[in-house]
Image 1 (cartoon, rainbow, N blue to C red):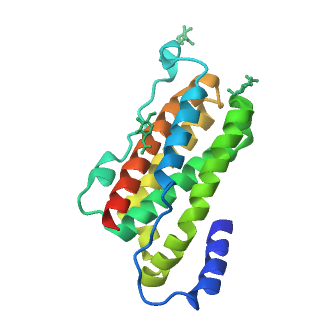
Image 2 (image 1 turned 180 degrees about the vertical axis):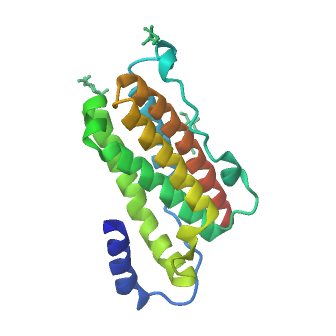
Amino acid sequence: MALLLSLLTVLVVLSCGLSGSVGCVLPQNHILLSNDSLVLLSQMQRISTWSCPNDTVDFRFPRGIINGIQVQEAQAISVLQGMLQHIFDLLLTDHASSAWNTTLLNQLRMGLSQQLKDLEPCLVQEMKEQGTALSSQGPTRAVERYFWGIFLYLKKKKYSDCAWEFVRVAIMRSLSSVITLQERLSDMD
Ligand SMILES: *[C@@H]1O[C@H](CO)[C@@H](O)[C@H](O)[C@H]1NC(C)=O
Ligand SMILES: *[C@@H]1O[C@H](CO)[C@@H](O)[C@H](O)[C@H]1NC(C)=O
Ligand SMILES: *[C@@H]1O[C@H](CO)[C@@H](O)[C@H](O)[C@H]1NC(C)=O
């Protein structure tokens, strides 16, 4: 809700300034930031999933959606934003703070927050062109369901170190797809 409100504020502020429908350009370093996040996440590993046989899980990443050739620019931005926001929300919790090295976690949070901020103008433009329709479409919903599954799993496993390790791996998987989407978007420009 807070995000929606801040987006609406930006929308109101910017709608006077934007003319026509120019292609939304992501900053050059957008992919690099995702790469940095991946590096941080790999540094955060403390245990191995091999030592957690009872917590094995398949979150069923919506791979088809990312690979789908039908993904349009606006849809890709919506999915990209959704993934980054869900990852950010997961890592912003107190449970995450007690599970991970705070120094690394804070760096990760800062990077993700920067990426979300960079995406705001794109989202504003997308909302201007398509309204809020995109947020209720299949791919955005699939991403939501995926992260909801992660949330439920963590809760069920009482935020154990083992559970967080599986989630860390899942987040890295998601970030690889974020990079795929970013590459696709920069090819579109
Ligand atoms: C991301 O990092 C890897 C090494 O971890 C490197 O091979 C790759 O080229 C980087 N990608 C970009 C786009 O910087
Ligand atoms: C996994 O579960 C079994 C049966 O509940 C238990 O005996 C075993 O200690 C557990 N293993 C680990 C690594 O927690
Ligand atoms: C957290 O990670 C940083 C950077 O790798 C390291 O210098 C620091 O010692 C770690 N802190 C703990 C409590 O492990």
